[in-house]
Amino acid sequence: MEKLIQITSGRGPLECQWVVAKVLKVFLEEVKNNNIDYEIIHRENGDENLTLKSVTIILKSKDLSEFLKTWLGSICWTGKSTFRKLHKRSNWFIGVFELEGLEKINFNEKDIQFQTARSQGSGGQNVNKVNTAVRATHLPTGQSVFVQDTRSQLENKKLSITRLKEKVLEQNIIQLQKRMQETWNNHLQVQRGNPIRTFSGTDFKKNYQERSFKKQRNVLKTELKNYKNDVN
Image (cartoon, rainbow, N blue to C red; front, side, top):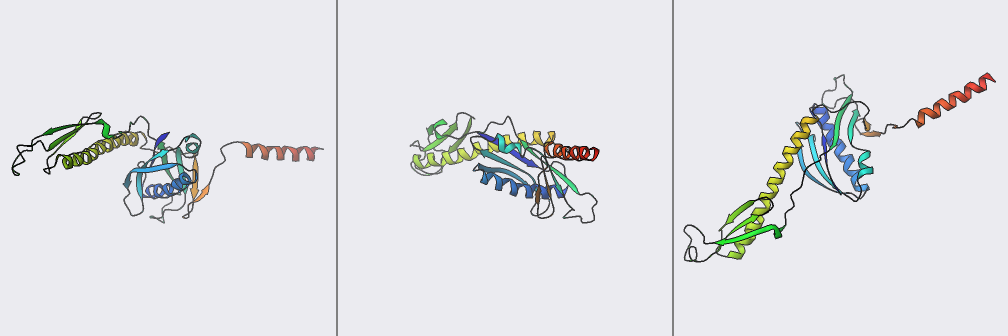
């Protein structure tokens, strides 16, 4: 199972970009502790050092649902601004979202169609007499490259594979960025209230919020028991 996850500051100020960088560190620590494979495939640096506007990560594991239940949603950091110490605001929100509907382009040499041709232009006796040039086409995407760098057809073929892979991966990144922009527009205002996680302080201490009413029920039971004792 693969999931594409984006941690973003939305349109939040510099403080939110700082929070994204801090959350990323905690997120990756938990990913490693849960034996989940990951790959950071895109990051947009923030406006100051050690800050991030957004980061996109591929997670790979047999089951990611339980892990993501504790992360997907808005995340709150409570503390004084590290950039504007006199700022009155103390709650800063960022979002962790799943990017859905994006098909990753897999590059496989078996999907390449090769054609040989005579090299073009000056280059010696072999140039126009031997088919040393190579055109390589990636059939799933239609991307192609033409290589005639050397007089060896084998070397040109190797070069064509490398260049074609770079071209296909570049297309994948463009597709990803387009999808990310759509998601960014959908989450320009990161949802506030009822955060999935809350952190506080410059040391980024975890303050997990109670997500059920178990604690409140126990308090009510105690109060009711004390009330009955007082009545009796």
